[in-house]
Image (cartoon, rainbow, N blue to C red; front, side, top):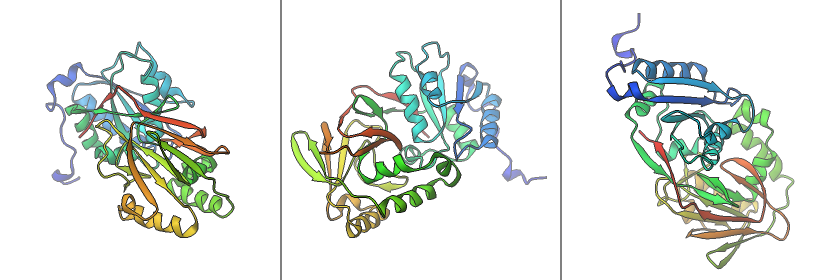
Length: 308
């Protein structure tokens, strides 16, 4: 028998209004971070509190977006169990749903940058408690060629890695797959020059990242003053990407000082463009997004997301 202090808390009397809460949890069972036992625990806690809750497992790409865009989606809360790409799918779908429900996230992807942004819990009981408390913040986002992104849109080496990583490798090895792919591409690639037009000012560089928040690639701070819960975008430009510059950038990123690193600029903007003489790979929220040119601006509306 387990000691009493290890038993899960009771949720039956936590939120009396939960009996009127209708919740749909959507999860991708093929993702590397899929944890069915955790989902079952969360489902149990929510049902104990009286919620009307169900789980739907996706069977194809784009299904999350279709669910989010359904104007007949009769729930108070759509919960995405997945990574940043899955959240992006929901965000994109919500653009076609005038009656979109509130959004919550169960982090289970590779990098989970949004989870770091919002300080989301990892334990099933804490996740269920946050959902039941239903404390919310506005979730602001940007637009890349009209497509929503909640975290970042970039062009350059990181986007080449996103384009080049095999999906099976990503699902099996997670972050290590990115490291392997980056090393493999880095040994043979020829970098391209980017022109970054920032509110009419022209910058040049090898890597450009438009960010909607503080973090990049996980728990690494690139813009300390930014937040997904406040409106405003920033662009990070890495001037050079030779081995020495890339190493300096990586070290600065790991110690949280990339915004002050040599050869790096971070600038707030209202409208920016990533341009190149020859197409350069682009990505948004960790998924491939074609190539330059990319036009970026902040969206005028926002969503409502559950926070701890």
